[in-house]
Length: 151
Image (cartoon, rainbow, N blue to C red; front, side, top):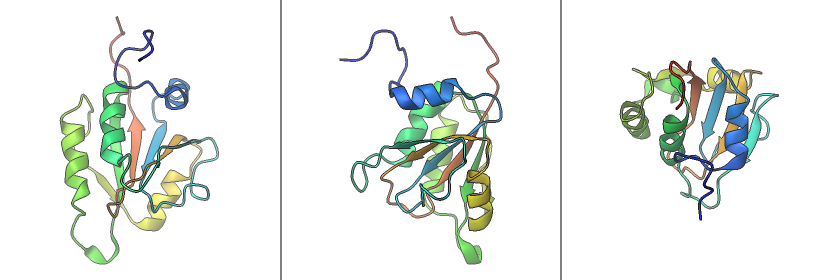
């Protein structure tokens, strides 16, 4: 049974609390199963483990829920080295963002060390470890501005 006081798809209490304490410009890391969660997260980041088993829950599943719950104004991804093609999951990220109220027109690729540096700053309020198995499926979201009051 779902709690009756929460409306919308996000009912995870630890995630909701971390997002409620964040603000414009705060960042949220959605990480795949290969990400070094314990050693490459921001000092202020709440760490939530949703990686129950390989493939359960995926980054796109979590992104879809978050995009309905918070304003998103930016999204960075960890780019493959050597100029390889964009990973297929990136098109799933773009679709999920396009199908949401997010104000994101493009994913910003960062090299591995640049991504780790960005995901380890004090601006990161939340790191969500998923069971995602796709390669290069790490996504760093920037929280935007709430432009209208909730009713």
